[in-house]
Image (cartoon, rainbow, N blue to C red; front, side):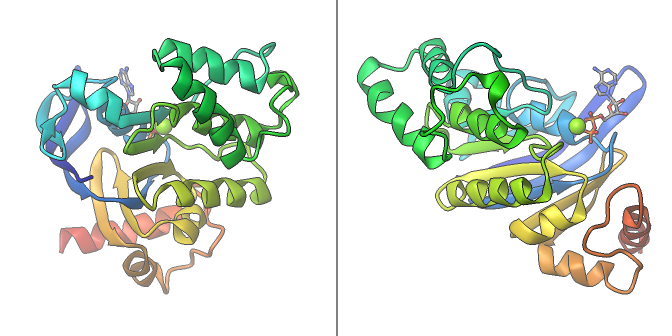
Length: 249
Ligand SMILES: Nc1ncnc2c1ncn2[C@@H]1O[C@H](COP(=O)(O)OP(=O)(O)O)[C@@H](O)[C@H]1O
Ligand SMILES: [Mg+2]
């Protein structure tokens, strides 16, 4: 699978939220890094066919984004704010989502246990959602997003609110899925990207500041005072400024 984004622009009234983004994304883990307001969610919503660009094109293996009948089955989306029914069990949620997307019964019968096992929730399949930890809920969200076996998995800031151990486990899981798929994950935490993504795009104020391999980003950032646990709140802005200067050159 190859996603080609060309000159993508999104305006909300007078405000440009995505400013001529061009980017090609292939199989593997792709990280979208940027502080709050950078435009990550807007971009991911457009890629998931939930939002329309003002101009520009996106294709999925040459299928244009506008062909939603063909594109939607290719995509699984885990939104930034996602809610599940608190009184349903993990298994019930999966059955409900499967019914919503019209999966045939035989597929459900095989696929649901398989997915719950893969996200390590099979033992807890009878637990009500409100009894699940943040990490477990996220894993259930991924299992749900993968029900129709999409080629592209898009997860918007999936590790917000997870403790470091859960975060790492969650990324390992995404990484497994990325061997045969495109997995796009957004975050504002530098170390998340460093640890698990092969390629990364850095966005700020709707612009792409950097795209390339994670090692190249690490090299660019080296020497500034960012450290591996940098977030928006501390050294991250310094790295962005440095990258901005390089982009301007
Ligand atoms: N529906 C909307 N109407 C107007 N402005 C919006 C809307 N959605 C997002 N924005 C603006 O677009 C910018 C990018 O937001 P967003 O894509 O959510 O960034 P991120 O996910 O990186 O935090 C922000 O300045 C935000 O205020
Ligand atoms: Mg966002």
